[in-house]
Length: 489
Image (cartoon, rainbow, N blue to C red; front, side, top):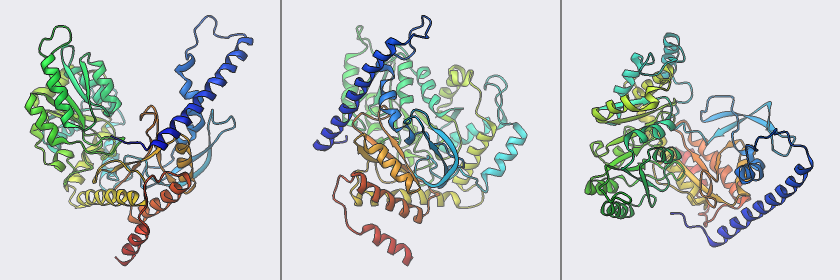
């Protein structure tokens, strides 16, 4: 867990307190002025009342120019960011015709497939001509093409499971699958920092939900032991089933899950494991097969393997892989399969082509080079940021590296200053993170060159000095030595 320095926590609380106080002060006068005006609601209650949109009105709008920046090119290592302006103190933003060419440190383009690819793109174009952009139907009606069947077989073989089901949206994969897997009388034990899609899926299942401390197998065992001994609420009957839900790489922390230890605990107490590999599949492991390959865990020990195609494969949608019986059950019961439009055929072809490149089935070794490059880029960037004195979360080999900002004033300052130097970063704050734990999230890609990363590090270092987010002593001249070594090579 993150330990916040005392003075940093104090100043962060003080900053949010000031924002809240001024917001309440402005709302008070707003109510007085509104009282003199004739209402135009014609008997309807206001759709947003008081504190319901307080955060949006009084905090988010101040810095909304740091979020949702439109781009006008493919999200490659460099992309075009459309410039915007506001005439009403950031309440509304208007696009201009000007663009800034920026280094992309925000997209999940881990293997570089989001841009045009010599193998993938021609095949996607041919698929578009043959099948059209959409099937205009669900999988059980007229929305299953030969590509969908091929993709499910390919994904199952890639992740090491007997069968798989593919869905059109990654978020829905979790939120629609979990309510089908478990219901009333069941127990979901979820990591405290699991993604919102998992949280909503667990809530929608009507199962009892318990949370264990983030990535702490010992606390997971304690929760399992207590819940098995206690049983269901009121009746104390045995649980119908228990599912432990974890992520391969936690998207806001960049940490690898302690999968071997968690598998051992779940085996001991006969609990099923649901593994979300949205950020790890394709990005880690010798052949890109995710955390199971990286950490040496047999995929047979993981009961349900979930992942998305939006990160490493440059497409859209998600998958669930497991036993043939499980997948057939999901195809018969999952609403995202039964009622939602199937994944777009060109998107399915993009995934198939990307997997073939990763496995070397395109006749080249580009896949292996991409995997080696993203690992080298991630570890180099993380190491240098730590040497500079930033508080960087996550583990080695993870392409996600959050830089802690904490104070709300530092969120827009860091984002805007980086953009001035043509480096586009993503800043994350409440409600995506706890109130005190605002951060900038850097995502590394195999498409980044060493020169790109050196430029990014120089900009981040200078902005970090300006904003004051280097919370640890820096090691002098490490980046300069690295640059010298690159030139010698």
